[in-house]
Length: 604
Image (cartoon, rainbow, N blue to C red; front, side, top):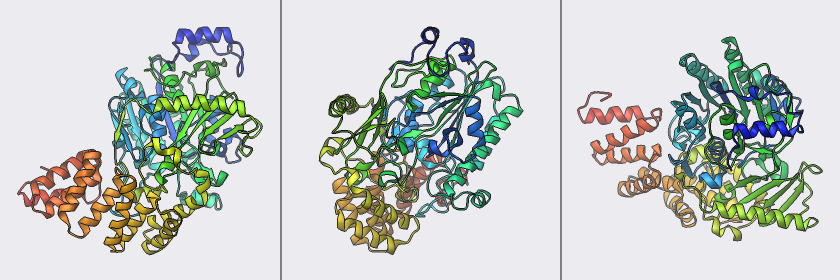
């Protein structure tokens, strides 16, 4: 879809008169923010219904202020309940099937894509970003267009099974304020701030743990809100808030047991698909306290922001929401969603279409819900509304068919290690060919097994290897071809020194998913520990051929080369890793050791 031009929008508003408060109370000039600043805030894994603007009892002062002074979209939808692909849709205005990033582990955005930051940078904006999780590290390709992309993460040690893969909201806010303090005051800024605290595991700082002793998730949300409040206060103190467009949203929600799912990614129900979206426009004539019931998508954010800032949006799937901001209407259109995360476990993916108050979910066992009457999606109407279901299915299948040939803007990547995935609660597989998905089981019939696997992953993240082995064995007894269970069992067995058994499980995983970089990485590490250097080198090189920018396999390839006496080759690996991820643990000492052995001065 193309975003309508501003002239078309003004004409639409003049004709509309209907909507969420009337169009005539917002003059067109209030919607012209050309040359103004942008603050775009993403609060990862935030359920809309866990904030005060959406009716929750938790006091979220910053979010409430933005809602009171701006426009709240009551039915905003995530295109996919996973962090990396959802943010990729946010920055490209494309559905995942178009940009090709379908999960957190398999792909990275390439330079073929045009991002929001690139458009703003080319228009003269100084662009900065501070991200809180390695899930959005620059290796995802989301740094495109940002002159400053702060993705510095710390880990206690590289091979820890429970690495620190996120930064607290306070640190993120400090870094964002530091960038703002050093910016050029003569140019408008565009700043993206990403908070991650609301993601599992839930462990708020002490003060917020005390305030919410039995509600750790609420404690983390309150902590994020406090830091958002400080960020807004800083802009207000220097007079910049009334020159800044503020957009706050979440990439996806979080299931708290609904439909048998904890966390997110497995299903497309409202618990994970419904997200907050609040837009505050600067200026005395801007809309205040408006609420919009029209369903919208995160793919609409890019064209909306660019339209408000007076810039042309590239072709995409989203629409400018400026008519809704002004109190008018948009023509009804379906809002789409997908999740391919079940493919990690060799379960069927699912796709959704929301239209005219109904939601259809395409899965081996299809579902249809009347959201107005059944917001909790408990009454599947697919049999009673057969004609409606058939029409929505046909429309959705047509869209899925289009997605089989994505735009080519993604390539293979290995952004997260197996240990980091376990610490985040992800299974760590790699998608299989969607063409074969029709024969796979429905994830709705695997929820108990899924929770068993999540419990085993928690043991992996806690480095409780023997307990993890026992738990994973129970999963594999029920489903011997589950790639995630095979992968994590191989990793646990390797940590227990049972390398022959580990290799057997890892090769079984690769037989099911030949391109799984995490199975290859675990196998390569097992070879390295056993001093099987030829096999280790070959496997690390194979991973890098598939994921050239992935730092961990390149680092360990350097270690293998150093052990073989190829110090020049090792140094080349270490220096490339330094360019990609300079804070990687053990990198500095490895660089120094290789340079010393080659007779080079430190830092040369």
